[in-house]
Length: 274
Ligand SMILES: C[S@@+](CC[C@H](N)C(=O)[O-])C[C@H]1O[C@@H](n2cnc3c(N)ncnc32)[C@H](O)[C@@H]1O
Image 1 (cartoon, helix red, strand yellow):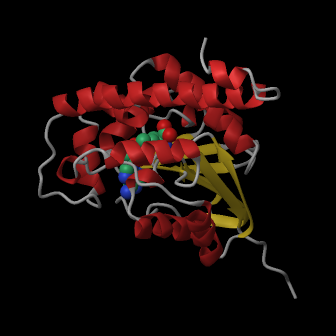
Image 2 (cartoon, rainbow, N blue to C red):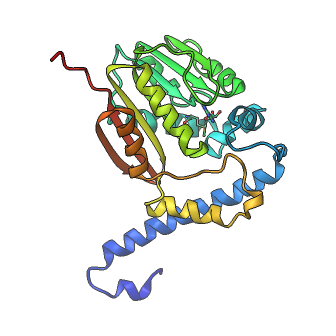
């Protein structure tokens, strides 16, 4: 029996449950780290002269094969994971910014279309943007026949192929962790540009201020600095992401914690006629 001493304390049941939940999550993260380390060792080495912000070159390398591309999205390459977590992200978007039938929805860093597969049938048009041409090729295969889908290769710093005031929702999930802070903010500014008045933005990142996010931070701290991969997760805080949205001009900014993530969303205000 685990925690025998705690179990003798009346009323400690809820704490035992919480501890066991955290222990389960810790064990899961430890297993994941072991897998990641094994994977790291087998990776083709990225030229050491590359910088983290050379996103196109970094992600070209990481997405060279289908398995490697999928691995660098979720740390797994099993299809069932893409299906289940794609549905979870769809729910997260539906319950924050909402996804409606007439919406043009843009994803920044769409990867292999994990989320696009769930959203494309629900909206008027889904536009997947990514810095990696190979990710986009895999997304095209996954999204074949699923409604109005457009895939755009972008520079890694802006949404240049998209026109002003052309989208109803812009979101980015599991991408900000790989970007420098300035480049995160640039995408928020770009989202403001391409959204129509009344349009909604959603972004997320691993949350430095949550227990689960902190565990990820601690695990990465154990990796010697010279061995840290260029795309290693760098966290955000609620304050950081809310500040980007606020500074870019968004209003009705809200946020919530979800597991190891912090999710932030807001709206591009409709200009008053006065
Ligand atoms: C962890 S994957 C997440 C993919 C997708 N958002 C999902 O949740 O399934 C990160 C993706 O961001 C893309 N990416 C990395 N840096 C980028 C940048 N600067 N601009 C646009 N996309 C980027 C990568 O090519 C990759 O497809």
